[in-house]
Image 1 (cartoon, rainbow, N blue to C red):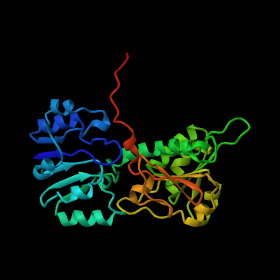
Image 2: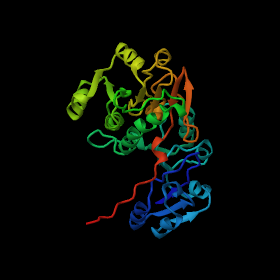
Image 3: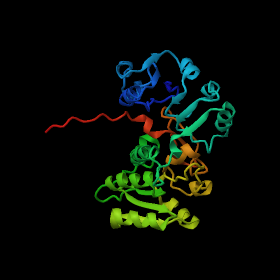
Image 4: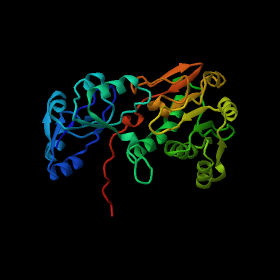
Length: 315
């Protein structure tokens, strides 16, 4: 099989999904690989590393889309790339089709077989390709939220963990799944008052057992959300319905009730967002203000981080 890896053409760093070790493994198994020059730059992987692993470098994506049987990407194909797909090809990437009807139509029309990373399911029912990205996004959310709360960013000027004599920020997390759990871990570690809302009693029990009394857990109802949102300095939307659009749990009226300069970090934006006021933003322009509330709605939040490198043992 001929596998192609085109370079990302978005405005943020591209994290290539097919690192050289995987390239070497596929070459060992008899596959030929085409990699667009510069595909690994955003992850700190030079062209020479792909050549050393057995890939053939090509200029531009045209040859890859014309020849490859399997095309591996990280993010969804752009409109121009979708026009290059053809029947019989396989596209393997994050797609997030629920909020993107135009992309869905284009992919159906192409006749290609398109497999979304975020819907690949393990025998146990887990999402093994989505989970690592959800972990990263969850851990990033309190970090970027804390930055947005600073006065210089237009926020309320609140330190997430407070200081002696000044109370910490109130952090509300919607959803106690992978992203929500990791967001709670970091927010608690930063010293904030943290509450997680979920509609699953089992999830709330797990969180209570994991974090103890320092974490607040509330069963999700519309009335409970309305009350909690008013008190929140930082709201983190970590709601996931696999393969479907995120539910709009936060209405515009709820956002209006928030404190001026409060912050919403909507991790669910890849699936349409969980607030009626959420719209996708980019790493170059990550925030906007609506109803007096700062919104951080960057799609593909983990793209701002480089791929990890194995550490050497010092023993």
